[in-house]
Image 1 (cartoon, helix red, strand yellow):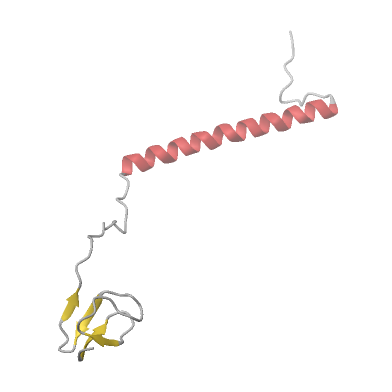
Image 2 (image 1 turned 60 degrees about the vertical axis):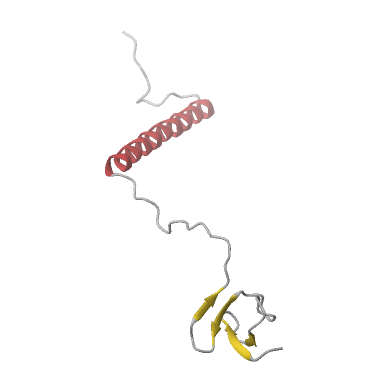
Length: 102
């Protein structure tokens, strides 16, 4: 064992200069006693963007219009279903649906 000259950047424990990984936590990054950062070479890591690109204004407007149309038709279907249940249960057609013949 040599002199203690490296400090692990993860667990902050001192280690020998000959080792490549910290015996306590397994990290491979060290700080030398003279405070120079010593990093073992590792595989490159793909960096993913933190923020996604904001959608354009036209795209957002079209999206909200289509969502509005969808909910409009959904409400129409629900109301038609409620009126159908009313007609089946009571046997009466509501006045606003009654079509008078001539």
